[in-house]
Each structure stands twice: as structure tokens, then as C-alpha cells.
Length: 138
Image 1 (spheres, rainbow, N blue to C red):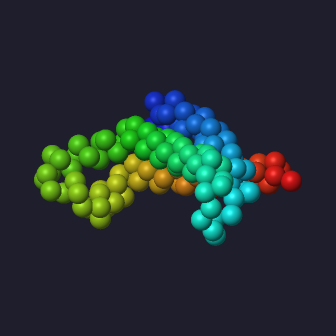
Image 2 (image 1 turned 60 degrees about the vertical axis):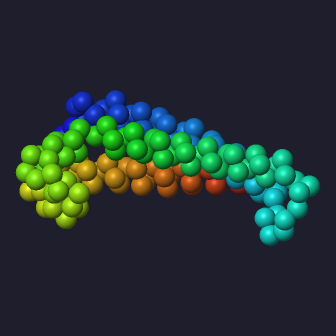
Image 3 (image 1 turned 45 degrees about the vertical axis):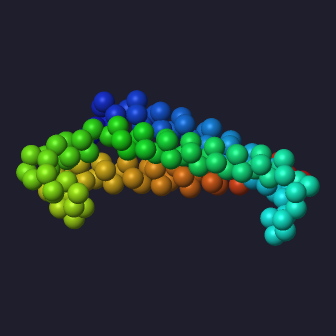
């Protein structure tokens, strides 16, 4: 299994980068808790701008972290290389990739674990940010 050998560093970096995402999102929730987004009012433009910047930073950091984790996953590179050898048009077809990965059970289950890790990481970041914001806002 790649994640238990060469992929340990990648996996731990992914988990390490979840903390800043939770911090940025909780700051967005705290700054956005006092905003009334139902009305257009320019009197609180600074707080709205700060809120939107924290949301954007949290979103961008989440996308960057997930894409680095999935992009550096070596068995996926093996699948891509195998498809390019067969037919250059096949590497765009998802069902063919899934069938190939299913034949190679290790790659299939490891890819499923990677995707599940990303999804659970996003859920953990949201839950942590919501709980932190709830305790910070009176």
C-alpha cells in the first residue's frame, strides 16, 4: 500500500494542513456572525470584506490541500501511464479507469481511501470551525 510506504509524508502533510483551514474558516464564521447579509449597507463594508477574504482563503487553502494530496498520489500516475499506452483517448473515460482500477484491487481501494480522507477532512474542518466559532461568539 502506497500510503503506508512512500505516501506517508504526503498523507501527513494533508492532515497537517487541515488545521490552518479550520482556523481560517472559524475566523470567517466569527467575523460573519455579526453581519446582516439580507440588506445592502455600505456602513459595514470593512467587516464584510474581511469576512469574504477569510472565506476565500479557507476555500483556496482547502482546494490547494486536496489537489496536492490527490495529485501526488503515485498509483494514480500508474493508471494514467497505463491508459496512455493503450489508447490516448481512453485516459479521459472514467468508467474504463474504474474498471481498470477494480481489476487492480489495491489501487482501487487505495484511491477510495484517498478520496474518503479528503471528504472526511473537509467535514472535520467544517465541524471544528463551527464549534470554535460557536464558543468564541457570545
